[in-house]
Amino acid sequence: MFIDSHCHLDFPEFQARLPEVLANMKSAQVSHALCVSVDIPDFPNVLKLAQEHPHLYASVGVHPDYEDTPEPTLEFLVDTAKKHSKIVAIGETGLDYYRMGDRSYESMEWQRERFRTHIRAALESKKPLIIHTRSASEDTIKILKEEGAEGIGGVMHCFTESLDVARKAMDLGFYISFSGIVTFKSAKDLQETCKQVPLDRMLIETDSPYLAPIPYRGKTNEPAWVSKVGEFIASLKGVSVEELANSTSSNFYQCFQIDRTVN
Ligand SMILES: [Zn+2]
Ligand SMILES: [Zn+2]
Image (cartoon, rainbow, N blue to C red; front, side):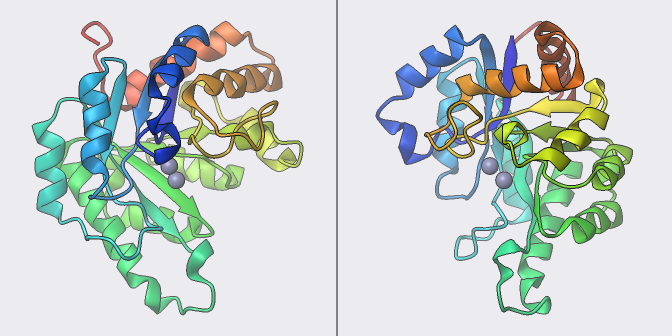
């Protein structure tokens, strides 16, 4: 059985067809999925999904790309994470300088501050971090270190960085999660990196509705298709699909501190 470690089932793309999407998961042998929060206004929908469906989990956090949105306080994140047992992580958080455009480095200080708040919330609530990093790996690692994030760990989601960045993140206790991007023909470097990431440090995800893997590239992605990511990586690493599925699923439980005997 596979687990989708990162999806956005609360997004409008899924609203009309949720039962179908959940049924597709089942037939693709995808046992669980983690619905990841991107902002406070949408968070109740993420939580509701996890509360209504035993095989879905939730996180709480505000995405670094969401600029004009209510800012989460440390207290809000910690209280919310502690209050609900289906919330297994803080995020997604991190840094995204890709959208900085012509703006100055200093003008992105709000993003770094928001990131620090999430790390502190993770440490305080003892829930691991879901990290989004784009065009900002150096600062991401630096801030994780400065804030002592190795005390809680988590996952570098939708990983597209170099092996060097992967190693630095793994040294801080983070798992590396690969999405459908790794299946793209253009992703040769990422495929090489993926080969080097040990099976016991790896997660898989869809980041759906985005980034559908081959052979569905361009379509609306969904958690069922994490199986395609898993099958691709298994062949890339020369292991059986079963081994890849078993390792990434048990890593998921480990990373998010989920007792698989009760869930
Ligand atoms: Zn992300
Ligand atoms: Zn995401």
